Length: 234
Image (cartoon, rainbow, N blue to C red; front, side):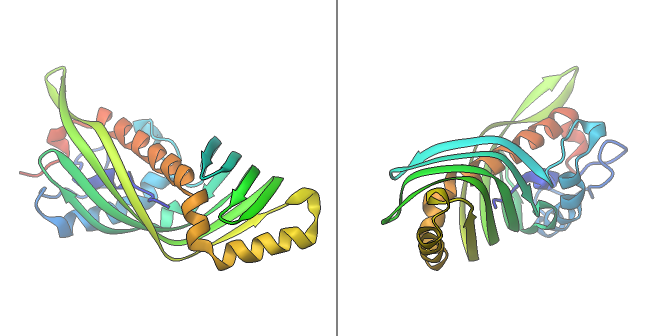
């Protein structure tokens, strides 16, 4: 999901050996930025040890815990796959902001614990889970600043925000709902997958935010390593 994001940090250009996987672009050349970022997505997703960047596909998340609309959620040991195939829809580099749109299809697998209400249905269970998200469009805005280290200028990310929508669908599978009562579990799965839009809005926000946060974290590492003069073609 989301997007979900800043493999696209490749939003400009890097010359030399620090990031040879990025093609230099002018900040105003959105076509070049998009093409350059798209080529960088699978490289960024695989991780770049020389820059201290961790692997994003698969992405491992230890725990996501939240309560939304009366639903207690606890997801552990989640593995996210599919980010290497994300499509960069748009990328803009403004003076103090970077904006990009990323479309992805991802699969999440891990351990869950749920309790409360899923829209109108009661739900309770714990065990393994799988969520498939097909074509999630994530829009991200980064607030960009600058800092100086040893005479070199580097970008900083002071804040970020995101929004998203699923363009195709989402599919939910939760093992051991209601302690294995198949009839109740089947009813919940049928309801959830028939009303995936509403379910997604209840279950997904903390998950999507966690994924985007990880991508932003890796982007900040990238900006810490590569000076602005190597990222911008004037």
